Image (cartoon, rainbow, N blue to C red):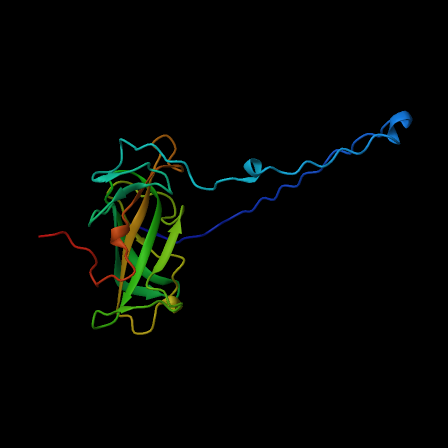
Length: 213
């Protein structure tokens, strides 16, 4: 079992362009020729769309899921289907709670999104300190690298420090509702995204979704 920590990193690139000045007209035509009007942008040229085109269905989506496998159009699952499990081990330090995480997907995992819930001694769900129903952590480096099939790791999620745990919380539970499966040729790349939104509603009973008997 490995103990890991999470480091986030981002970069922003800004590009600048410059125009090329035009040349002067001849003396015989400069006084009579009117300057060419500046063309106005047409509606069709200005109109753009930010929506992602429909991704074709993947034939290799994990069992009981279907979809395009992209981040915005992942392979969607329902019910109690899980590819990963995360359980608080009842310990924490200043950096936050410790979770036992296991990859049960059967594939190498290199991306994850975890939803973290808090409950009091009576089992009542508590809001986070910023007034939300859950704490969300998502990163391409959530597991500090990759997790092999059935691999276990002891993790602290960098987005949740000890001082972020709400007062009165005696139980902490987590659901990995989005998982990225690694490309077989390059494990640093995500080949397919999977999601089960039903695992992580805003209002969630202690213990979460359980298989029907």
